[in-house]
Amino acid sequence: MAAYSSPCTVDIIATAEKQQHRFHLLLQCEAADSNLHYEIGIEKKGPNGSSRTRQSGHLSAHAGKNQAGNIAINIMPTDTVTATATIRRGDTLMANTTRIFTPGSL
Image: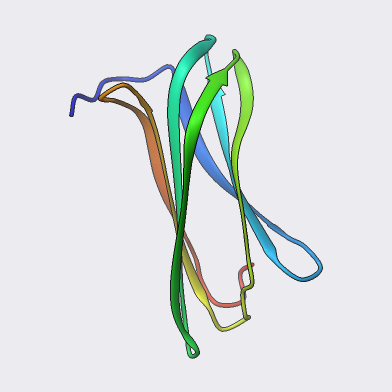
């Protein structure tokens, strides 16, 4: 898979809600691109076990900030969450990132 200096960057945003935590991607692009594919993966590990969930889809990004994906999960204060994100155009990697949220940081 080819990779090059991308006009886009991606970050993973975690938001605490009353009963769950919500994760989505924040994509920042220099120019519009109507042919992007995103994938977000969440892995939760804690004393009660582990779980994984993934979401993917297509995205038409405009120049500036774009939001993609929406995963809501239950998290205990003792859980560690690893979130990964990739943005591709065809077989070309446009942007990727991994964030680790340690117990109590969410």
